[in-house]
Image (tube, rainbow, N blue to C red; front, side, top):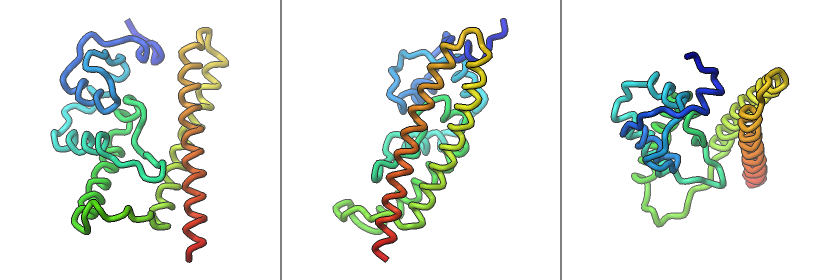
Length: 185
């Protein structure tokens, strides 16, 4: 039986592996929560995952410190799996920055204000994410208009729209921070 993409997102797989439980914990999923077929397939396409890559992402997802309300980590398991390589790059970059901060000083020092370069990078990432969300929202609008059972698509649309609004708010915060930083120079 061939399932549509929407059906794969709703249908649950029968088996929960230790790897699924480990990654699911990053998103506060219970160990007994079954993954969708869509998520399971995305994970299967990544296998085998080297342990050091898995450990890097686990450290990133469980220990990332949110700075000024900015959190670049994926909020959805399937999105993480579909963007695995990019997230792994972010995790490695974060680990390098954490290592540099640990070497430079103790934890009792006040947090360093982000540089204009860091703020521009954040703005770039946010703009990219917002554009991707806008494209997907447009695709969903078209799909909802032509489908006979749009309920699943409408739920996905609402969730994506909420993420889009969240990203726009973060972009406004970064922009305000950039303006306040430029006033200091």
